Amino acid sequence: IAGQTKMELAKAAIARFVEQIPDGAKVALIAYGHVGSSAASDKLASCSSVESMYPLSAYQAENFINSLNSFQASGWTPLAEAINKAGEILKAYPAEEYSNLVYMVSDGIETCDGDPVAAAKLLQSQSIKAKVNIIGFNVDNEGQQQLKQVADSGGGEYVTVEDPAELE
Image (cartoon, rainbow, N blue to C red; front, top):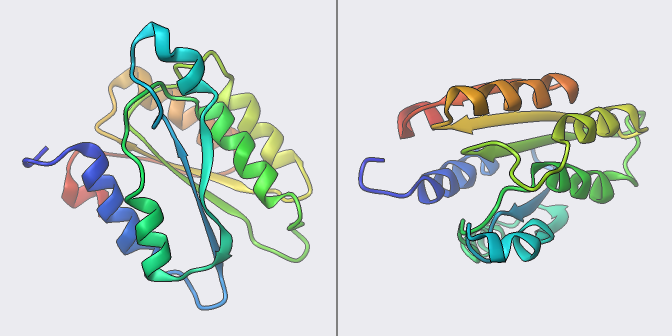
């Protein structure tokens, strides 16, 4: 899109987004769909690779940007496992004391046989009550329906964007 990959555009938007978080807020960055390829032979490795690239901590611009630039989109899409990973990271932050938000950027549906709707419901039902907000970037109709259902189940919002201006 506009001469750039969707990943490049998403990373730029994420970088600008985190610059605006309130002082004192903690941020984490989880990567998924970044190992292997979309070939069937890479499915297991790709689907099991959901990694914390920036551990939950105060925002430090240089470290965060380095983490953001340390991976590329290349494999399958384990949305459910990414949501589960967010739950693991946030489990020590109960909703009575913290406001927990998860933002996901995706260009498609779950492709790793997980159930992201159930994962979002579980995340919302735990003591952390993390809201799952999803930005669908250039997603087809099927993808939009699934991602909206995941966000609804996670008590969050779904937004679809088609181009860099909307992504901002």
